[in-house]
Image (cartoon, rainbow, N blue to C red):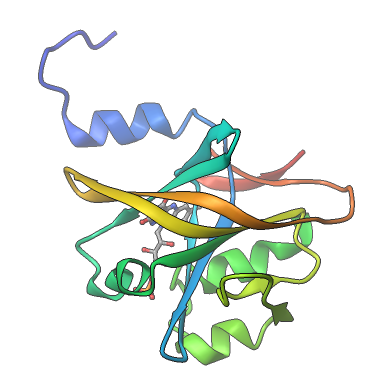
Length: 164
Ligand SMILES: Cc1cc2nc3c(=O)[nH]c(=O)nc-3n(C[C@H](O)[C@H](O)[C@H](O)COP(=O)(O)O)c2cc1C
């Protein structure tokens, strides 16, 4: 058991690996430039008004687009979306349009790309952003919603994908 006051980041990541996270793709668009990022650091904040948060690493300058656009969508993945999750995590180094070409997307209210066939889609207007350590917490109020078909969810646990 580790009880030190200052926790090593590797120990922290090892502990967090035991925490199952639903895999989602956060997307945005600004002046026609699209971006999507595979995330697990996202959750609900409030249901009235519908509000959620997503944490993005600000050491990646490409993530600035989420701030510049002021909009984002959170696309909740199902088991069949593991290839998409890989693509939007950058593992196979596809360019941005090749990543989006792997699936069908539309828009709801904000113009951010929304995944057809996602378990759920939350289209959001950015209402606040706070930088904490390596990440920026984006808070969005939900302006559009889509509930997809029921089916197995794509989770990330113990450094691998699982379905539930
Ligand atoms: C399962 C999984 C979960 C991730 N969760 C997050 C996250 O919550 N926030 C984040 O900023 N990056 C997260 N990442 C890393 C980003 O997906 C990755 O750094 C980014 O897509 C790289 O984009 P680029 O190739 O366009 O630079 C996660 C990656 C994986 C595989």
